Amino acid sequence: MPSGKRIKLIIFDANKVIYDLKNVFQYFNPAFANFLKSHGVTDIENVSKSWGEFSKATELGKMSIQEAHRQYLSKVGIPETYLNEYEKLDGEAFKKAELTDTNIRETLSKLKNDGYKLAILSDTGRTTADFEVMFKYLDIDGLFDKIFVSSEIHHKKPDKESYQAVIDYFSYKPDEVVFVGHDEEELVGAKNLGIKTISYKGDPMGDVLVQNFSEIPESVSRLQ
View (cartoon, rainbow, N blue to C red):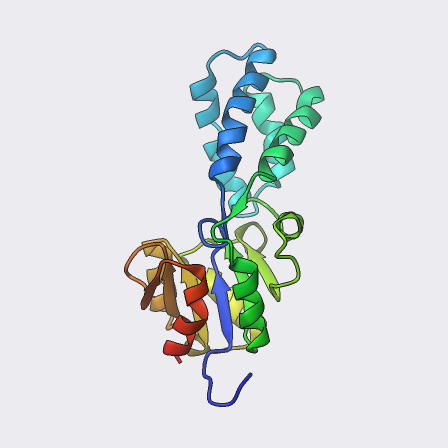
């Protein structure tokens, strides 16, 4: 870390900061509807809504994503023998994620070269292994020092325990950390812990608001 710099760690939210899931849902929703129809399920809207209870359980690590899929199919009346078909559909949809900006890899590389530790903190039912696979095909693998997901740390933002899990891992103080997010609650949650914040195309509650990912290194410097 260059002398004179107080900030040592930058924590990034994942969805809508690093990647966008819009194309994931554009692919998944009609494909899932066709999957349901092919197995005799006609009440597509209500069946789709019933995933919510399983999603919440996976996000806090109370249930694996695979077990949630199994129980979900059982609830809507689809035999477990079709689980692999559903898992394949889900996996193909997951690959449709796209980076939110074309210069994310370049910017993250610059931050690493400048000596900052980089981490992901995401509320998700996915695992760190899932993220490693995604980041590989997004061509940003190896750029984060650690990935933290709510399914494994059992806390979601804006709970202070969520941010604290990252801080404790790196043994830094809150004022040595910047959180890059977009959601008001999550930005406020970080600020309440004494973490400086950058809002990326999001709520103006951040200490700094940026519209381009490439602005983040300069913004971090301004927060020193």
